[in-house]
Image 1 (cartoon, rainbow, N blue to C red):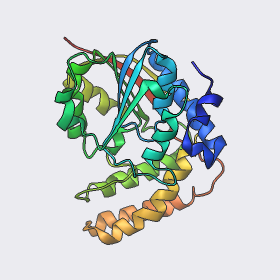
Image 2: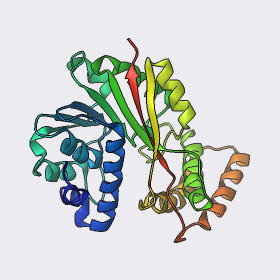
Image 3: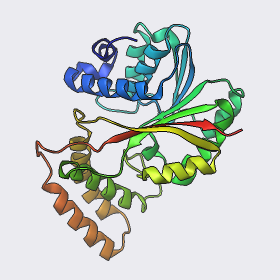
Image 4: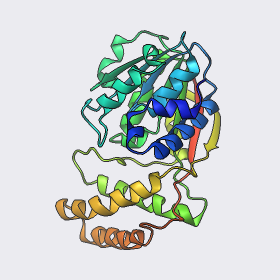
Length: 281
């Protein structure tokens, strides 16, 4: 496997802030290491986004491995770097020949194009809160079940362990409550759920969890980004959507509390958890 420093140079976002990109890459390396994906594995990555995890996966599986990285979003989505621009840089890297990107790819519509047991591993890395509902997440987990015997997942752990993580936690809860009132959305946080809910969904859709662990996030700046986004966008959402006055007042109070965390150096991101589940035959 390549070093985090080298992998970070393959990412277009690193042109804007190399240190932030390095921290993101180091985190993805810890994440992928916890999954213990073998050299030569064939991987279907759902919700690949800018390819932070894709790059590490390609490094781990090596020249004999293959990554099919798919995302529902258009290649033009994303700022200051689009998904397409990030993919282009990654395809030009030393692991580019091992990766295929497909954007505007709906797994629910196109799974029939993929063969039974075509992959060794399915990966969903920090993308499931983007799903419109838990029902949709469950439907996807059921739909891809024939494609691989093993699934690797990660997401933020919706349980702050220290006071410095409370701001991230509150920003997630506020956005999740507002999302309930939207008919459609492209928000970062649409369906925040607990680890317990994911375990239940996996069980119901024919998967058995074999391994679960917490992944260190101390260097990530996602908490600050999420707090800033919530404070800038949520007041607009409260004004635009039909929300019960009592809930609106409650959410406004939560935003007041959240402002106390803005710009605080002690703000830390929530922990992340990773798990591996195996298909029940």
